[in-house]
Amino acid sequence: MSGVVTLTPAPVLDRTYLVRSLAHGKVNRSYEVHEYMSGKGLNVARTLHVARVPVAGVLPIGRDDEHLLFRTPYPHILRIVPVLGRIRVNTAIVEDGGRTTNVNQSAIPISTADWQRVVDLTIEQLVETDADWMVVSGTHPFDSDTGEYLDMTQLFERTREAGVRVALDTSGVPLERLTRSGLVNLIKPNADELANLVGRNLHTVGDALEAGRELNALGVEVALVSLGADGALAITAEEAYWGAAVAPQLVNTTGAGDATLAGFLADSIADEPRPSGALPRLDLQHALATAVSWGALAVSLPTTLITSIADAPTPIVEIPDAKRELLETTHLVVG
Ligand SMILES: Nc1ncnc2c1ncn2[C@@H]1O[C@H](COP(=O)(O)OP(=O)(O)OP(=O)(O)O)[C@@H](O)[C@H]1O
Ligand SMILES: [Mg+2]
Image 1 (cartoon, rainbow, N blue to C red):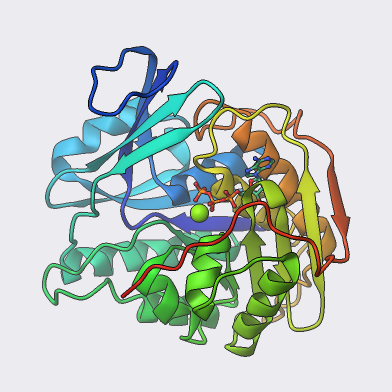
Image 2 (cartoon, rainbow, N blue to C red):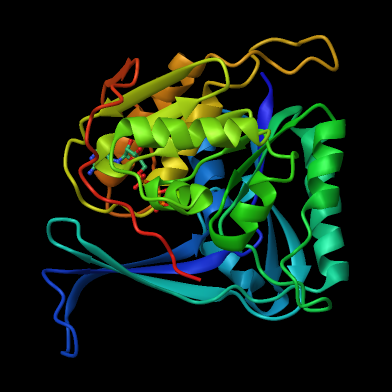
């Protein structure tokens, strides 16, 4: 069975406080706290590992914080590049009913030399895991030497030369630029990210579908658009499906997008050896079904850690109903 390599350029120490309700400007008491190493690529890697997909999760870690690895689930799937400095901290406050407030620390810049080591290790892991996909997830830090966002060009080119697809889940300027690079096979925007990519708000499933098709025209093979409680769309130039699953309960929506991406990838890898050079055929309908099932599972759990996919809810997948109104309106970032 082929595998997946994930890369988390800006991993994080995730701290989650569970509170009954959050009062701004007041002292709040938490009845439960979780703390562990996280990052969107790690979330994807762990969920794939739980689903028995061969996976390696590459991440740079500040030399002062390497000890955190001892407190992290499934450390054997991680591949570490020690870099200068410390890891950042993200705080989530989860209220009864699932409303979540996040305070995220900005990504810490990485030197050009350290980034090159991360790229080299990632490429090496593609061979180790016989990867079909290389996934870059989460915030992109700045390069401390150039002052620009980390340059993904070499990483993406070498990945594609190795016959491996590139998946990208990020936001803002890096998403905008890399979507247009012609080097990305799959992106997983949520509704707001998609709205910002095309520069207009989305009101219906049809609006999201049209926006996804614009991304296909820019060279993105698959737009996997997650729409929160409205499910998700998988869109290629040739076909498009909408899918959803009912979440058993709504506890914490953080990381639902990562579970969605993991689900899609789990059903988009080759079961058997394939002729070299050929990319495995994607079964969009099947992959989307797993994506929305795992997304709905993720929102029913208190943290981003999924420990079993056995009870993931049953999905439905249909031809998109263009007229269907989205429950939540999108927001464009000005500037
Ligand atoms: N309220 C909900 N009920 C059922 N499923 C949900 C709900 N919210 C999210 N999901 C599932 O999770 C998927 C991903 O959610 P969403 O679009 O919010 O991702 P996201 O914004 O990228 O999340 P994150 O970046 O925090 O991982 C949805 O496509 C859907 O399948
Ligand atoms: Mg997301």
